[in-house]
Image 1 (cartoon, rainbow, N blue to C red):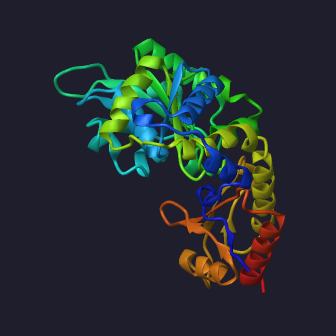
Image 2: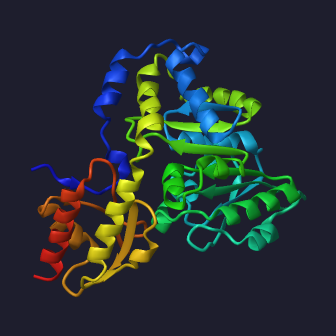
Image 3: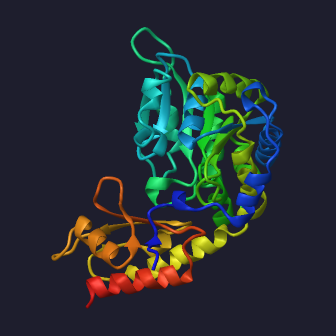
Length: 345
């Protein structure tokens, strides 16, 4: 029996429709801008996000890297949320590529206090960096897939406008946020200067993320992508899967959320697990674990023996599990049974 893989929604396999589209894709050289399938994907992504243009990137990290580089200059400062992916899990590209200083701020489930953000904004002088960019994340990975409230985003937009700052959203799972909140992605995207979102997570493409924003920003971003080694040739074979992601895979995300809530509700009552099921808004479950017989590594090992794959949560204090299209109801039931066997039997 194949293991039930809850490690991440990045483990999703392309659908049969994606594989057919990839095999039949019309292609050209995207580096010189003549891949027709990529151009269709970029036009569709820009339309969905209400932006002038978009750029197909190999990864979300590259999309965020391009945005940070395009919106900032060396010696400036970027305000980030302290547990954000862009600050903790993207190989320090803010300092390595953009040569800017990240200014991490605490938050409530990913939502930074607009007043605190405003107090953190620094004007240029000879001793400290000038703040030029604010980065937000929606949904928030390390806060267990929490949805960023639209009102909070609007308040941060107002702060950015008052101080002449740019606002970038790491929207890797923005469609999960929209599905959970009922707020169209367009309403989130119109509050920011640029947005990155992934095709390769819950939307199940094998590769790729989109960066959307103003036309001149994307034009410059294309040059940065080339400098970072992200120029791709007949990449329409991958963009074809992205078109399926955007036209066929968004509406099924609610199934992932329902399965995550079911799993969270069942395991939250078990010994050693610290988890409030009410905090599971989308497809990510992060829970603390403290047990007299087992540590986190031991629990993961026992789960693995029973065909359940999961990962330690950031910081190692607990466990992270993610639902996706390749995790069905039977996988959730299997996981619940494994937890009960390990922790109750």
